[in-house]
Every structure is written in structure tokens, then in C-alpha cells.
Image (cartoon, rainbow, N blue to C red; front, side):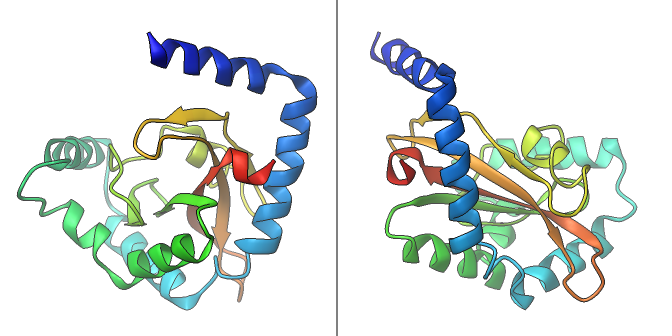
Length: 190
């Protein structure tokens, strides 16, 4: 019964036009002031470029198989797909940024040109984000695209959070490389 109440509270808050506009403005400001400065760090760009080269020939069957493998590995003792995405220099960099946010950032996902996880600060429930707005409303749109997700109660962090997603581009030539999602504690932004 409690989750239904929390969901209703979130929907009520998100449905209020004034709060949504106010949150969107705060979210965009947070991204500009606290995230974009480090989002083009070479460790992140190099990780995306390397994975883009590796996944260039992947079709939907390959992606579906990888996503199923990831889902099966979540919470398992053995995680040959999750481990290299969670324990790499880019993922460590993301965790440092989340830690430095003082609790504002709850999670960070870095995605390649297919919407596959490149690096994550926390293990995600799936490997492929390519069918979700965090990817379709950013990478597919192009440079400067930003998607601000609905405020929802997150069971794992026990906070109301929103996912702020944006396109990652190569600063040297403007090429769209991938996307990033930054989960934020909504209460901390308001």
C-alpha cells in the first residue's frame, strides 16, 4: 500500500505545471553548472569511442542477447558482462563525480551510439538503454539535446529522483558519440 501512496504523491507533484517548469529550470541549471564541465572528460570520450568501434556491427539480435545476459547477471555471483562496465576507469570517474555531488547525483550512465552501457556508477537493471527516452530523446536528436525525465520514487536510493539525459559530442569536431544520464535527487534541486 505504501508504494501506491508514494507513486500518487509523485504523480501529483509532477502533474503540477508550476512545479514541473520550476524543476525543469533547476535541472537544466544543475546540468550547466555541475555536469557539463566534466561530461567531456577524455576518459569518458575515449571509453565511448572504443565501445562505438567495438559495437559498430551489432544488430538488434546481438543487442537483445547482450541485454538478456546483463539482466540475468544482475545480482548474480558471476557477471562477465556487468563487471567490465562497472569496473573501468570511466565508471570510476563517474562514481567520483556522484560522490562529489554531496548526494544530489544518485546514479550516472554513459551510453554508446547504440544505447548500450559503456560505464555506470551503479549497476542498472538492463544493458540496453536504446529504446528509452534517455537515449531516443538525446542521441537520436543530436548535439545539445536534453531530456528531463519524470520525477519518480526510486526504491534503491529511497529518494524521489529524475533522470537528466543529454547527448555527448566530441568537442573537437561536434560528432555525436553517445549519451549520458545523470540521476538526481529531485528534493535536492528544488
